[in-house]
Amino acid sequence: MRIMSFKPDHDGTIALLDVSAAELIYSYEAEKDSFPRYSTINPTTILQAAGRLDAIPDIIAVGGWCTGFGHDAVGYYGVAQGSDVVGEMAIFGRKVHFYSSTHERSHLWGSYGMSPFPVGMPCYALIWEGWCGDFYEIDERLQVVHRGKVMANPGHKYAFLYMLADPKFTLPKGSTRIEDAGKLMALCAHGQPGSPDSDEQALIDSVVPSEVYPLSKEELRNSPYYNIGVTHQKFTNLARRVSDAIFDSFHAFAKKNLTKGYPLLISGGCGLNCEWNRRWLETKLFSDIFVPPCANDSGSAIGTAVDAMRHFTGNAKIKWNVYSGQPFVIDEVDRTGLEVHPLDYDQVASALLGDKVIGWVQGNCEIGPRALGNRSILAAPFSKATHERLNRIKNREDFRPIAPVCLEQDVALHFDLARPSPHMLLFQKVLDSRLKAVTHVDGTARAQTVSQVQNPHLFRLLTSFKAKSGVGVLCNTSLNFNGAGFINRASDLLTYARAAGLDGFVINDAFYVLKEASP
Image 1: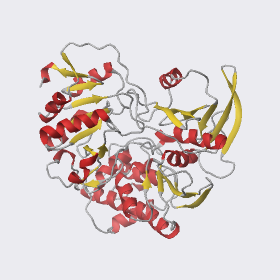
Image 2: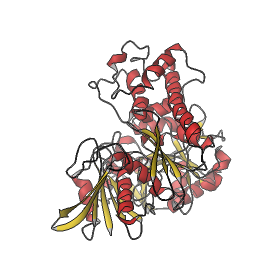
Image 3: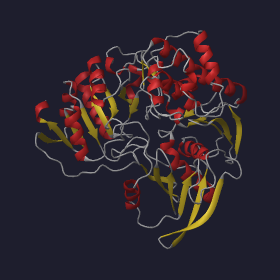
Image 4: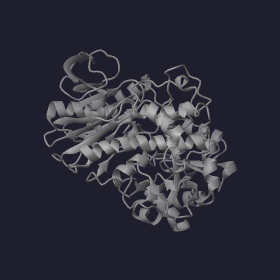
């Protein structure tokens, strides 16, 4: 039995589960293959997903959204009775089961199904994203209790700050930019520590408790932060204060109401905030925390599939691999100006140590928004100039940090959190002063750890680089055109390499060097 699941609207995704094996077969995100970030499902996604099928799926699952999609009458909110729909439909002349449940449920069951905690272990679940800000409890029989709504629209409020300060934001009233939340996370590190001053407190009191959606920039035209500029010290101080205020609201609720010590599942777009994830870990309120690599809406198709599997079988746990995205397309490329070598890890490591910037492609792409060593741009981690060059290559703001990837067994040598972080979802303090390219302004980094089992190709490269440099760490940033999802075909990669100024790239077992940049 197989379940094909669809996430409508932004971050459109199609996922396929094998029910008998309780295993994720794939999760294809519409933006991957250089489509615009946050794309809805498009014909390419549908054809790629259908191309992997050898038979019509037994169950079609559709996640809820703000408006109905045919059978979908469940909408966005809620996990209680009445928040799912069960029926039948016909596809290519075959009758199949149909299942739909709310968007909120997709986050809850996605994080539960992907978590490492054993079947029967009760968990708390935090769903915090653009619209939801709620805690739940899942018991050993998979019964769900709503423990409380802490805040309306926490993710929207967080991203709204960037819009408020950005004089370049000129979209119509009520419009938002999904990408602003990630930029604000980078800017919070530039804020000075301290308690809110009167201006900061006034803004916090106006925005944080508000039930209004969407917040309007023009209604705060008289605010001292209106179009002040996103890098202004007064604004970065505010960003840090509001970030603290949002987290503190949820922490206070959890401390009072979540007292059983269960592990915490974190989902929704706010689950990509590495500083908040580290703070949850340090509260000691929970035996552990788990954040899926696709905590944002890119994981919702998986969550709805898990929910459907739970409904039809009673099981809500799956096996999965973070490299379950689309396979790389090897199409025709113009090899003029290219040298092609069989992949030699030592040769690539030497090029990186010589300050070359290399695209790195292996196998299927990652699920979720973070490049985790299959669709990456890699560089040596030692120079601030490398950080600046990578941001130029990426065509993004110079205040954005570059993440490190580190051998798992060496993480305690370089960072203060000596635990695996395979999906780049926790902040760590940098202990190694040599790692200038990956050290953010506040001394932190968002490190990914790599083991031989997790990603053998990247592990071998890090091992070779360590043998030459003494450090098993590299810069790791996503391989994509600005404003687009991961590059996923050879012709696009070559176009990007030439336009952005990469020195070379690896595709599976071949190393392509631009002749003008030959090592």
